[in-house]
Length: 314
Image (cartoon, rainbow, N blue to C red; front, side, top):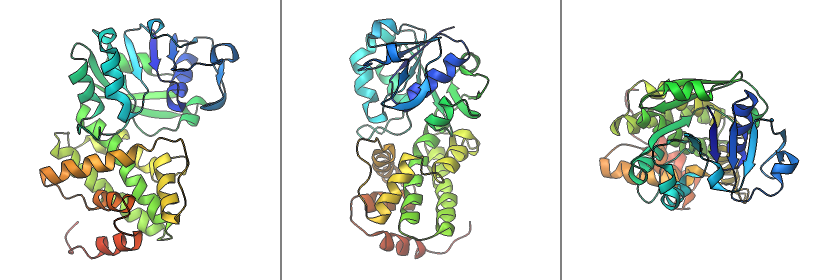
């Protein structure tokens, strides 16, 4: 079995390294491969990690013709990328590694795949993971979701990359999307000096919010208790390696966020807020994040609004 990975950002590159390290042939496609094929590394996006022998780099999509295709493209670019190349994906298994909700359609990655590539098999790879950890071969556990996830579980697991399987595409997608929104909220709290207790409260109540939204969209109740929900939330809300958490910290401190970095939680927060309002789902933390990002309220005002909500049973 061989694997194609489309997108040579940090995470796509790290997955290519991890899977190829197990001697599975991997083709890594990049829009601009530069000299990666000759230097055998990706110094621009993931410096310090050499490519295993089983990893081939290309700038030609015709070279990435494996049956299993990992889509390591940003969430808000997924629909346009698939629309442009839909014909080449017929009959193939498309595994989205991005996490979020399309801000223009409200769709998850799997829903986008199903709509644009109806002859392909949609799948998701999600869970608590940082690119540098995956590339370094540190122990990492993820969830792979599909109608029949076992073949993907066997094909993509390695000595340090352990995959658990799920058939709940909705739950896995929603957990991966929503944890970024809660991570921004936690970053805001830490950046504004509201303290660790406030972060713990936001993580806990945010997790309840994630569950409400996921179940309303048809997810199974237990899915978010796993790696793609609670596990990813715990990692993303506690480490400055998390782009969304770091963005929240910068915003909380009144500092400009890092340039040139994709913050998936920004668009996802807006998409979730819109969907939740239509479905009449109570999402106070998500709405607070959207309002603060838009500079409609200050972080202090957001904190006071959350604390002033009616008292209720947990």
